[in-house]
Length: 119
Length: 112
Image (tube, rainbow over all chains, first blue to last red; front, side, top):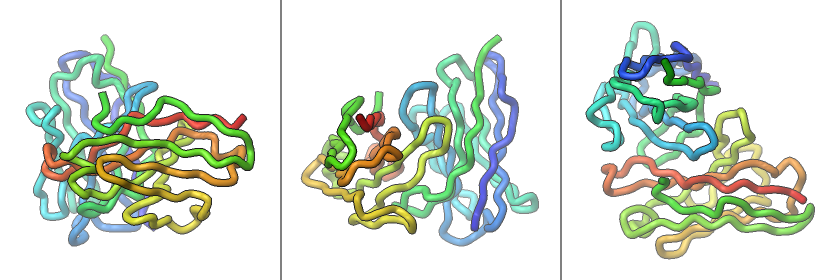
């Protein structure tokens, strides 16, 4: 059974870069056909897809964040990572990592990590 | 603002049947993309409830069912139980995102 675990700082200052890592166990991030994605949920609000990275390394970003986001895979550590630059208070959210296939919704999610943007 | 529109809240008594609507547009649900449904208990990650054409992951009871028509979809919960109280989210795909994920704003279900 695959498990995903988010890690990173819980507090980031405005204008700085938010960096999160998702550690995968029970599967490989290089497994063919799978996508590894990030979804966030601002406090009291709904879910928002941020972006996904394909096992081959191809990336797909929500246009709302495209200029600020970078996803990467680290096959040696079996992790994938999110970097979101120039953060503001609007980026305060619980960030989830998840595994999915194309047009198949994520069934495997991490527990989520709350990231607060504040000085 | 979410791409898919859901009512903020619905409620029902134990044993009743409730439905939650999800309204999209021609670029998502109306483009014949599947509508999937998640259940989220506050403080936990969303749990996949229904996907594709009424497929249920292992462990999800058949009290939960989905339907779709045009640019809208619905989740029906029959025989309401106390532990059904949660937030429910619809999810589909959108041509403006090159076919990637969009979500509804969520509906809080209260079991009276």
